[in-house]
Image (cartoon, rainbow, N blue to C red; front, top):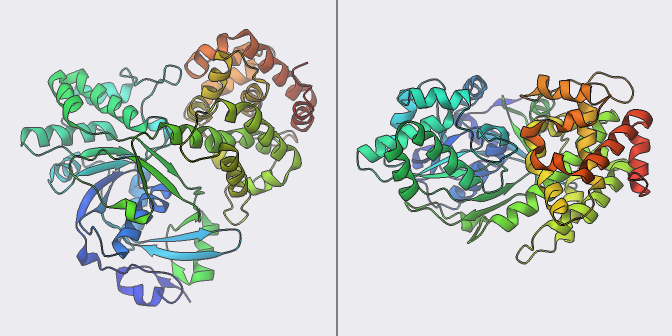
Length: 494
């Protein structure tokens, strides 16, 4: 028999899961968070829950905020259980559930006036966001904010009724400036190099389209700290809901599963104050960039590297991909020979030891992270996780056989069928355009590299063109398995 998760049932829930040591009545909101997805609930919300459980900083609770239609569905699920979340942490040797209560409310998507009013509240001193890598209106090839995007142009034309996250953040900052309320700090929690700088560019860039004076004020007064976040968090589905019900006797409409490991490295730039997150393991450092490079290129780049060969070989789970000898060896050779050598040093960190940790994390069978999750949104992920390493090696005059193979695997995957002939459902905002280019590449490999907004200057390299064409031809002629073996035998570039 299950117990429906709510504030009123926490005593019963405590029989099988950890529950907050604080009362909801003890909390006051200090943070508005855009993008209340699984990662936020397994990461930032968990750190705050840990802090609140120590009896500290109860004035830093979270109010969620939505923009997309999918946010409305999440809001309805969480509202039905008093904004509580069951978080199941799974290591190779143990599993455990806890209920977090750091969120006190959730603003309805589509109600700009209510969201702006909340952002204007002086008690809100941080606005945070996890909106995925594709949510920042970045031109993939240039890496810069794209002011011509239709959604940005629409908000610039009607700043009083914004529809984007950045339009809402901007409207809140304008209201605070006009009322002489100190601005909140804007904190990105997404996997983007220099995520604070990228967020600054989006907010200030949008302001400059309609109110240059406001843009200047933002540039001079608003903090956008950089940060690196890390915790493998798969998608929730019927399986996860059933496990929480069967193993922990909790009826949670949208629980979160994650690995035990978590990491958060932050630049300490919070003029209006911040929670004492260092008390619960957050690292505050003067420069986040080395940690970002390490994590994004080794972990996220590693995910991108194994996603497509695994998908093409009909492998569903990440740990199953790591059990495949060819895929695991491909990842190791790629990381140790091409990715790790171009990563700048990280304080007190051995990069090879860090990669060994990543291998163990990818191999965790209890997480049940899926290959389809890793393979989605490649048009946003490849330029951030793979191509920067490619560009760095080319700039140093070094070979890119493995990295070009990753790009070729992505192209071959986009052709739409696995090696066994099964159809591949694509999940990418640019699916039609990139799939057309992948289809054209069957006859002309350079047709795929003509996606200038993705490949940029990398596609102009004769060496990259040659390595990509060799890999794609091998994949098309001999299949994924044989091509991986050819790479592992150092004969793919011949």
